[in-house]
Image (tube, rainbow over all chains, first blue to last red; front, side, top):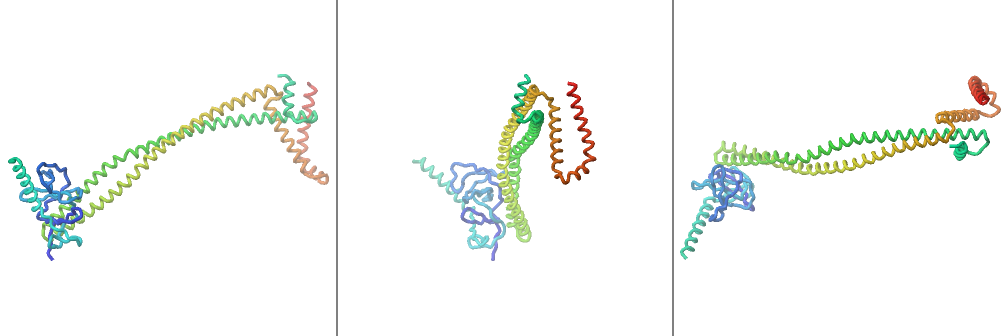
Length: 132
Length: 261
């Protein structure tokens, strides 16, 4: 059976797997600064460990920590999730099996692209409105 | 005060009888009166002393109650002082747990066996930090339970102090009343002395002599009937002869006094 290293997150009703290659560090939750124009799941910016990261809301839990990931040279902080396990877990089709439960992989890159697309869409909509 | 008044006052106290018995009864009444006066004076004086001792004990008790109140207030006010280090420990354990998560994450990035060792350490540290956090939460709950208890001790100590103040006030009043009683007994003695012929100390001595004499007569009377009289006489003779001589001397002295008058 294949194994994959990383962390298992509880997001409130579901478990998600974050590969070790994507997850950077786990840091204490810092105050989120809301930024006008950001689109969900991005909720603002956070300053942590001398870095500014875009905060992505990936769950509904009130957690005391965030997971910092490096994506395309930029930092994102995953909020609303709690790390329940770190290590190497049996791989499944969608992610890993942890404690007998399936934890689907959390695609942070896709989330980032989704945010960027939403921002662009909002910008384009604004231009259309100005043309009118 | 006239002699008639004295006689009428004593007449109210004594029982009727012949003249000899009247005099004896009068002496007994006066003796009883002064004895009662003496006892009342002693009792009132003891009451004053006892009240003073109660007040002294109350003062010591007041100091102890003040100490208890102060201790309870200090204990109750230390809640925030205890809370602060607990909060620091909580933060430290949280950080330790995050460190363990990061170590575990680092172990997941590495290949075996180095990664496995790191993950094992991370699991161990995270387990300890989580158990420490639970124990800390239990400790915090216990302190939160104890804190209101200390506040209640403080409130009860305040109530105790109020009650104690009332008690001291009552003891003070009791002492004042006892002192008044002493004064009244002294005044009563002065009035009694004014209307009585006999010196109080003499009356007391006479009353005691009367009591002893009655006791002796009663004891001799209970020794037996006529048949045993000879036996009793022979047994008591050595003791009675000196006593009879003393009694004769007393009787002669009394006769001499009368003839001198």
